[in-house]
Length: 308
Image (cartoon, rainbow, N blue to C red; front, side):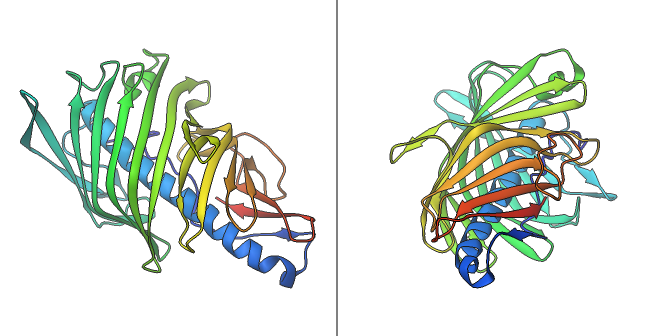
């Protein structure tokens, strides 16, 4: 299976940072929680989106061998021998079994079960794919995150992502919903998160792009993409204020624009994607960082620039 754009890399867990306009002892408590959650949120979205893409590519007929090749080894294998009865119909049950091999800079273990629970085929408008994560553990740069739970993906407009890339379909939109997605972080902290968003796939002159928008609402907030409890036990709500746009960028897919706000934390923090090392918005494949902004206890604007 080609890597193409289905392996959407959001950004690394958290790396080089630059703090401005602040003293260390005034900002460290704020920055520690804010940067940790921004990294957790990013890695969770990135890794579960990749599993979604593995499953939808499988149903699109891109490959039934499950061989996502990278670095000369397969990331997963597929068992398509089982069926499950839903109503009066027997539905094929695919199991994606991750092989704990180092591919694209990370290892993945565990399995995802994919069942087309509604629709005759995945390319039908309104078709529904139910994914069950069974101890899917992703390890990158010595840090890991593990997922258990269920996600429901609806093919809102119909069509196939691979046809968008081929230029024969203008766009494909997937609705992604998850309730009580259980996440275990590398410090053994386990939390439950909710997801509600759309991912719209389109083709541009620069290749494939995905636009992500939040569709959830809770506690008076709208445009929610994720909400739940941070690893530190704080209730949070993450809204998408400007659609997040991810571009293929040759072999380095990345977010090139968009804004997200994390609410409910020790301080509200906004994240701007698609910036350079100085925090300037470039909104192109030359983007290398994202920018975190918040206001400290003294009412001063603080910022941190973190690398993808």
